[in-house]
Length: 473
Image (cartoon, rainbow, N blue to C red):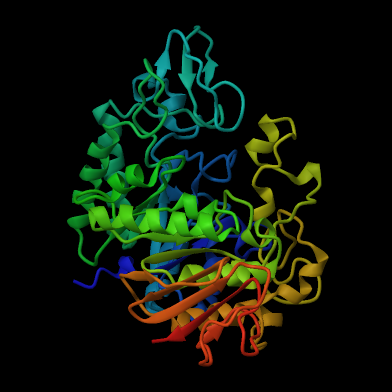
């Protein structure tokens, strides 16, 4: 069995911000379909679609009101089927989000008063929402309902068998349409210990994932699932990908790591150990729709280029976030009036929220909306992105887009890593297929006399600071 997901590079598409076909300023499924050639040319193995389901869009689509239909802002089920068919024609697999911790407060269950399917209590405990403020909201008759996120995202009661059966059917609905897998939102959050302090990572949540794995395994074609499990130690995360559970889990420790060699090496070692202990592949990720883009987090595109070669040189599977292949920075100066993220709203503007990493992509042209669509864009794009468009970078051999394309073409699957002696500030290792050196020090270093297979920045006999290079072995 090939198990394609063990070494796959998967590209996250945030539908609102990828490409707009109908000119309303919001990305949509036909827009994605029209741009799938970019992903095939880039060389990724699969795309992961953030939610496109029916939703009031209070939380960018993660407040789902109908899990079996497409929100009109994104298109129709026929548009989804067309996207899936075109992706498969191009050799790309498609993973879709599943949001099982909560629904929208406009979901028929909540509107119809099916409180047994949600977490209602006569008295709240002291839990706080991850979006700020209390995690409980009171209804007219005095009861309180739990929402670990926004009040318009009530948490489901996974002790109710009807909830479990509903999500079994939702998984089958999309698997029957041909999707290749799921990204499980807040995979560690469905079971709560209201009498204690356990918001996440309750022991009983694993029963749900074992149940889902059986459903996935009942379909042909190596369907898979990747778990979002955050604020959890690597050994605990590994339990979500142990035998009989899900296939992958995101590596948030790596995502949140600073550009410091000792910290990165410690996280890489811990991640490899935890994955090996359960026979699962490690995963690596630098940016996503919830985190500040790593160009900005690391202090510039030079380090970001070095970071992606370091990441793609590691054993296992990697995730890319749309636009990172263009070297896009976080947009830090969005006007207050265009911000929509509930983190921004609920904090009264004290938290910047996640809108800055969700600004629509620049495809072509010299001015906004840079080919995003025939209209404008739901968040404004910086005017200085003209040099970062796909069009501007496609034929430039030194562009960040070309670096990603070259790296994905030259990358070879590997299952092992061996550290080599190196100067302070340098990460030097070998895999089954290549030698990788990342210079995080402030001085040039000499690592190998041979010409590198690929480097993140120009080299002249030495490896410059904030540069990663690959050599064949």
